[in-house]
Length: 174
Image 1 (cartoon, rainbow, N blue to C red):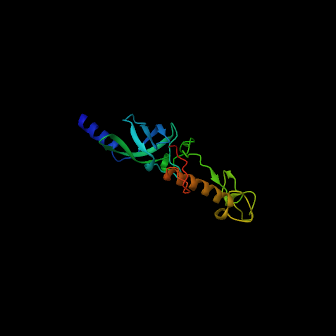
Image 2: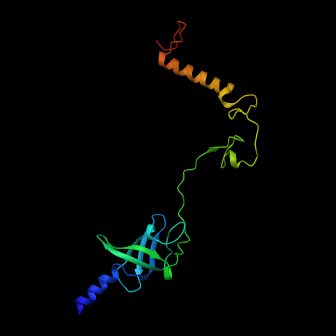
Image 3: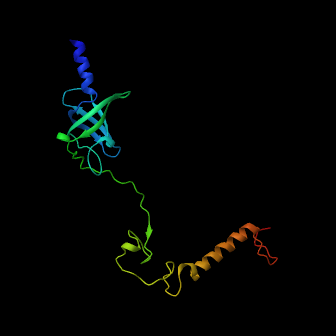
């Protein structure tokens, strides 16, 4: 008689639909554990097996139906849905998106802001230089850009020549 109960318990754990509650679910990592109502062992659940649209998660103590199978690590859910096969409700908590705040330049208004040219509130602006905002030239032809490049290239050449200016005089210390 004891063997029959053990076989039934093993059969219940593998394949048939069981009912339980979400013990806890880590929304950021996408996994958690279910507690079966029949008092069996906790069941691991991954977000990929949850039946719902959009962002898949489970709320704490959410009633679910699930199927599971035994793996090397223990019981793992293979399908999780709400009561009577409906979609799960999910957690109300959403993980923060870990984006590094990046300065974006709007090429319409020229500001470093939270928008791009297609979303700029100013509307289309005349074409102009984004460096000095002059309307008579564009960034590639900016006189300020050339002055900056000339001085930086001059200092680089002085450093590589050991301070020799090319006119016979040396700026390096003797």
